[in-house]
Length: 371
Image (cartoon, rainbow, N blue to C red; front, side, top):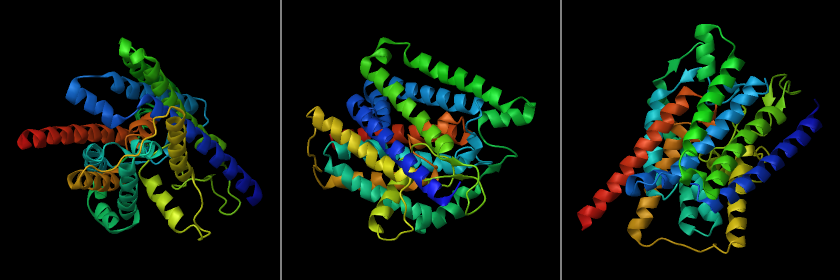
């Protein structure tokens, strides 16, 4: 494949990713898809409806990803989630920070983008602060602290850290067959649980669960299959075009927000190229804005007072630092990472939920103390 062919392929990948992200933004705005909201509904009201939507999306993404692994189209070890290092402490600490922060900031990274598209100026501030904190944790002052502390605590396996790879290495069974069995089994169980109650089968829940899960799976196909180059003519190595990690990627909304700010600030620097992550950030905002305008739900909204501003700033910083430390957010680890059956993703997701519950309890405590 020649350089001009790779350029044309990158353009195709970017436009396809942008279009899917527009669809994702519209679906999330229409169905109120929100992980923080799902956890909050359970803690504050005992309502599991939105959690069923999120769990359905997990199951659909898991089935889709592992079906492609079984077909030999993609390989989980080619992603950042299923490499040979199990960064358990980073996942625990970063996940808890992210979960706590998303409650203070009124939503995770993806919800921040949806709220920006719906006219929320608070989320625009969260976007900027989250992006700066994330970039500092990728390459700046908090990156040094991350590498010197939590990243050192890791287990290095002789294979990928996804369940099919781990089991295949210990049993000798086929990794592709294990992916098919585990992906269909676990993913099917999640979808089955999600639709077991009437509220899980509501039109919005089905649209949100199936739609978001399908977009995650399709993004894996775009990055890992469509954008895969067996041999880059410049490096003579395997490549995945238009990705920040140089590996196959699906959706995540912490590091890509940092890369979006970087691209906007250094646009004239020709080394700053558009990637799947950057166009996905823009696509979600655009899709949410289109949906909000069509349904006439677009509303300008700002901070109530200094306390509201402070909570959102702290929450944004915690999400930026925590999301990079944990290698993802509720979408990045909770859906994209979990779809690979990565052990690190299971740890990160549990920590995110624990952090969110702790923050919700903290908010209740503050209200009770004020009363």
